[in-house]
Amino acid sequence: MSTVQPASSLPVPYKTRKQSQPKYARPNAPIVPPGSVTGHSLALVIAIMGFLASITACGVYVVFNAANVWTNRISAEITIQIQPHADSSSDDTAEIVQFLKGQNGIARVTPFSQEQSLKLVEPWIGRSEVLKSFAIPKLIAVQIDMSSPPDIATLKTVLESKFPGALLDDHGLWRNEIRRLTRLLEIGGIGMLFLMAMATAAVIVAAATSALASNREIVSVLNLVGAEEKFIARQFETHFVKVGVRAGIFGAGLAGLLFFCLPYITEGISTSATSAAEIRRLVGAGTLDIGGYAVLVVVVVAVALICKLTSRYGVRRILNNQNI
Image (cartoon, rainbow, N blue to C red; front, side):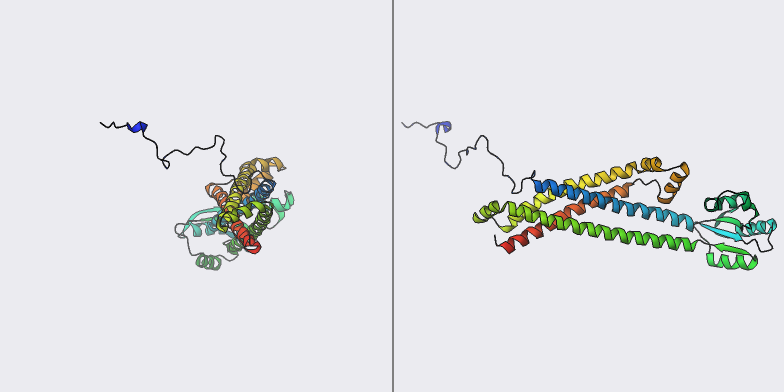
């Protein structure tokens, strides 16, 4: 009578036995150590480039938004000047005001007094009693209804023909100058970003060459055991992308902190409350909105892409030239 052994007493097949691992087994170490001198130096350079790129990109963004605010405000208002050499009186000003109020697309008409007109020239000439003796044109501020604006050219023709000595200024010259200046700043900012990207790429290629030379023996061993160039290049690419992302986040974060503190810095360096108000009027508060912080994210992504593509191309080109 045969006895059947229990399943627990049967021998375990060799292939199903659990392979023992060393107690202190180390994970696969990267080819380029993350704490190497190359990594620290490269991280510092990329962080500086990321900071400068963030300052440039966000600066252009802030100026662009401020220019849009300026042009929108200027487009929403026209000015009527009544020349002093013409035979004009307060009655003529009242007639022009009534004429403008009767036109379609006019939201508000505000005539300026002589004192208000003098205050407009005080920032350039200063406050003096002599100004009251000057023949300063009378001004009428006209607010445009932007939902249904009037035909400015037709209004100008009718107004100047009906009231001799009255001139309509639609501030078109100032709008064109603001747009031209904004365009120049945008072109300059894009050019600076391009130069920073080229400099960053050159630094990464130099760092990749140095890292490849310092780890030449390891790369040779990997090639002997059958590692492909794609695998080796991917190891270097991963290293440089990690360095680039960390450094880019640090540089962009530092730039974001600077813009966050910019209003307090402006108040600290301003000699008076008036100068601080003029700076805010020029570029706004200087802080970033959601779009500005999105620009910082784009800078970090761009830095990561530059590190990825440049390291991949540089390492593969070096491996092909050296025939490792």
